[in-house]
Length: 253
Image 1 (cartoon, rainbow, N blue to C red):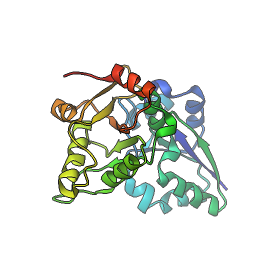
Image 2 (spheres, rainbow, N blue to C red):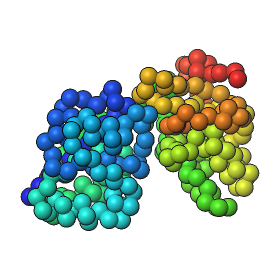
Image 3 (cartoon, rainbow, N blue to C red):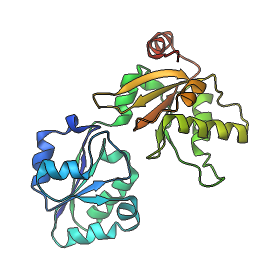
C-alpha cells in the first residue's frame, strides 16, 4: 500500500524546513490545499519552484466532495503529500482524508507546521488558558448571514473567555467585524458593540506582519485590505496583566 502525507508549511516561506522540502521531493504527487488558509508568500507556484516538480492545486471540492480521487491515486501505489498553510490538522477535511486512507490500508504521516492559531494567541499576549471555542466568520450570501460566529462569541463571553475568529479566504478584518455587527443588529442579544476592543493579526509570519488592537468601530473604518487577516475579541473579564498587555497593542487612529 502507499502513503499519504499531510504537511504543514507554517505561515510563510521562512517557516518551511529543509526536512519538509526533502520530503516533498521524494513523493510521487504533491497537492497544495488552496482553500483552508492563505499565506502572504506561499502558493503552488512557489512550492513547485522550490522542489522542482509540478504541484496540483487542490480546492475544497477535491479534498472534500471528491476525496475518493485521492484514495484512488493511493490505491494505484502513488505516495501523496497534501500541503496546507499553517498546520494540516486544524482542518477537519484533512482528518477525514487521513481516516479514509487508513481505513483501506494506507499509511498516514502528519508533518505539523506553525499554526496561525497558536502564533496569534502568542502575539496577542492574552492568556492561552482563557480562550474558548474558535469560529470562522464567513461572507454573507445574498441576504443570509451565517449566525454561527455570533453565537460562539455569545457563549464565550458568557463564560468570560476570549474568542479567536478565522476569516473565510478573501474576507478582511474590517469586513469580518461588519458581519458580526450586522448579526448584532439582527439578533440583538447585546453580545458585541462598536466600542468593544478587537485584536487584528495581519499577514502573520511575514516580514511586514502587524498585530494591533483598537475599537471595532476604528477597525471597520480603517478598511483594512492587506490580507490575510485573523481576529481576536477579548473577554470583558481581563486579568490585570492582560489589561496591561492590551494597552501595548492599542492604536488610536
